[in-house]
Amino acid sequence: MTTSPPRTGRRTHRRPGRRTAGLTTAVLTSFALLAAACSGPPKADGGNVTDVHLSATTPQARGEIDSFSWAVYAEPPTLDYTVAFDYPQNTILSNVCESLMRWTPGLTTEPGLARKASNPDPTTWVYDLRPGVRFHDGNEMTADDVVFSLGRQTDPDNAAAWAQVFQNVTSVTKSGPLQVTVKLKKPDSQFPQYMATAAGVVASKAGVEAAGKDYGTTGGLACTGPFQLGTWNKGQSIELDRFDGYWGTKAKSKKAVFRVLTDPSARTNALLSGEVDGGYLIPTESYARLRESGTGTLYFGEGLSTVNVNVTNMQGPLGDVRVRRALSLALDRTGFVKAGLGGAGTVTNSLTTRAAWAAAPEHTLKTAFDGLPPSGQDIEQAKALIKEAGATGKSLTMATSSIGQDVSLLATAVQAAGTRIGLDIRLKTIAPNAFTALFTDPGAREGIDMFPLTYYDSITDPLDLLSNFKTGAYMNFAGYSDPEYDRLVEQAAAVYPVEERLDIEAKLQRQASEQLLWIPVAEWPTALFLGKRITGAPTTISYMYHPWAADVGAAP
Image (cartoon, rainbow, N blue to C red; front, side, top):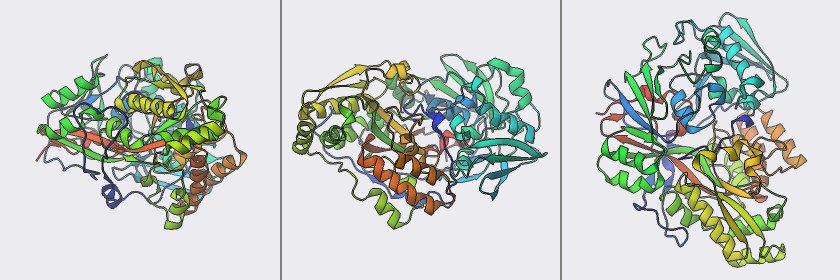
C-alpha cells in the first residue's frame, strides 16, 4: 500500500466494484509532469528530470530472446499468491500465476482464466472458465481448482492478505465442470474488480496440496502463467522458465531472471552497466543519470500512486484537524517533488489520482476536486492554526527510513515544515527491512504519529483508497470513525453502474480530504528502465497483475 520495501503493505483491506470504463491512451499520455524550483529538501544526487511525459507503452518486441534479467529491490519472503501484497512479490508472481480476470496495460479489466464473467443478479457472479488450460504441474484447470484457490484466501491459517476482498462472499461453488458461482451477502461492486488481482489467482489444488506448508517457497507454484518458477537462489535471484504448455501466446523470452539488488546505487549501476536489462521502481536519485546514459531508455507511465503522510495517531496533537491543516499548509510539496521524486511527479491536494476518475463526468470531477484544501504553502496561516489549536511547542514523531528518497526526504520535509510553524517533530529511523511492520504490526506504530506512505491502487477505482478510512478498515491506523463516511462507503460499494458509484465516491473524497485523514503530497508515475537489448514491457502499474514479462523480447 514503494520504490523500496512495502509502501502499501495493506492488502487485507479489499472491497467490492466493477469498472466498465477504463483509462485510454489519451488519459495516459495527457499528463505532463514538470519539475519546479525548490527551497525545501536537499537536491538529489544526479540531478532531476524535467519534461516528464507519461508513455502508454514501450515499442513492441521484434522477436524472441534466450533470456533477460530484471532488478528487484527486495526478495519476496514467499510467492504464495494469498500473501502477494507488495511490489517484489507481484512483479514476479504476475508472470507465473493468473487470475480469473486480467488487468490490462491500459488499466482496464478483461477476461483472464475466466472467458466470461456474468452478473445475473446483484448478489451473484458467475465465472465461465476457459477450456483446455493446463497448470505447470500438468493438471488441467477445472472449477474445483477455482473453488479451492479462492477458498485459500479466506482460510485463517493462511493469513491471507486479500481476505477482506471476500468479506461479502457467502459461498464459492462449482456450478459446472468449467463454471464457478460466487454468492454475495449484498451487492459488491469491488469484488469483481479484485478478481483481476492476486485475490483472483487460480492454482492447481493437487499441486498446492502436494507442496503443503512449503507452497510458495520451494518447488513450483502450480499455476497457469506464461512462465513457471525455476531456480530460486535465496538472497540472490529468482529464475522463471517459459511454460511451453501455456494456453495463450507464449512468452518471447525462454527465461526471465530477477536479480535481488537491495542497495539503490547497486541497482542503478547494474542498469547502467548492462548487468541487468531492466527494472521498475527506479531509484528517484538516478532518473537523470539513467535518462542521459545512452545505455537504455527511461520511461514513465501511469502509476495510480499518491505519496502521502499517513496519520497514525489522533490521540495527540494530530487529533485536532487544525494541526493537520497547519502541517499541510507548511509542507513544501514542490521542493519534495524535485528532490524526493527526482522531478517526476506532480504536487497534489487530492488523496486519489485523477487517472482513477477517468470514467467520471465533469460534474463528478468538480465535486471530487474543486475546493480541496490548498497544496501551496502559507506559513503564516499555518502558524495561526497551530496557535489557535494550542499546539505550539507540542512534540510529534515521524517515522523515516533509508528505503528510498521518497521516504527519507518526505520525513525531512515534514520535520522542516513543523519547525517553521512551532511544532517539535522528531524523526524515528526504521531499518528498511523493518518498514513493512508499520503496515502489519500495531506494536511497530507505537509512539509514531505519522509516516511516509506511497499508496498504489490495485484496481482503477477511487474507492480502493477511500475505503481505508471506514471504521475498522485495515489501513485506518489512526482509528478515524464517522457514521456518515461509513454509510457512503457501503453505499458506493453496493452500486455497480460506474458513473453512479463515482458520484458517491466524490463525496467520500471531499470528506476525507477536508479532514486530512492522510496529508496528500504528490502523484507519482511508474518508472521503467529498459536497456537497449530488450523492449515490450508495459509502462503502467499493470505489471503488478498482468503477465508483462511475456511481452519482453528483442528490441528493434
